[in-house]
Image (cartoon, rainbow, N blue to C red; front, top):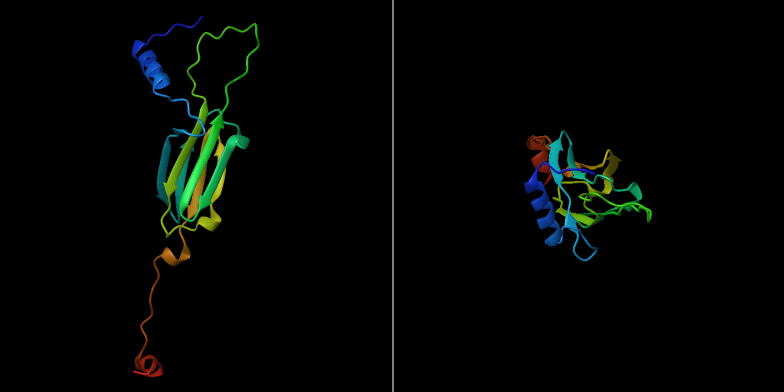
Length: 144
């Protein structure tokens, strides 16, 4: 038998349970997310511990990135008595509006150790570039 040493943790778990922390397809739970720029890429990291790779769905429509995942409960036999069950199960979802400056055609996704990492390159048109100044001859060609 397991003993709890933090009574407030149990209260938090119960509150989450009653507030509907287990996500459903119509009302999914939010997954913890970090987002940052690293060089010429925008990186989004989403925590999905215990989610099978085939239970993750990633979509981009226009500039809206949607990640959905489902964590299924562990099946136990009839002779098993569960002593503690805190890990969230259900459906998780996150939507992020992507800027026009990102290249949504070249998104890469990796899943390792319960973390889904999306790498979105900065679009070429959004990168800083030098503009060459034309001389007097260039103005005459334009009809000025």
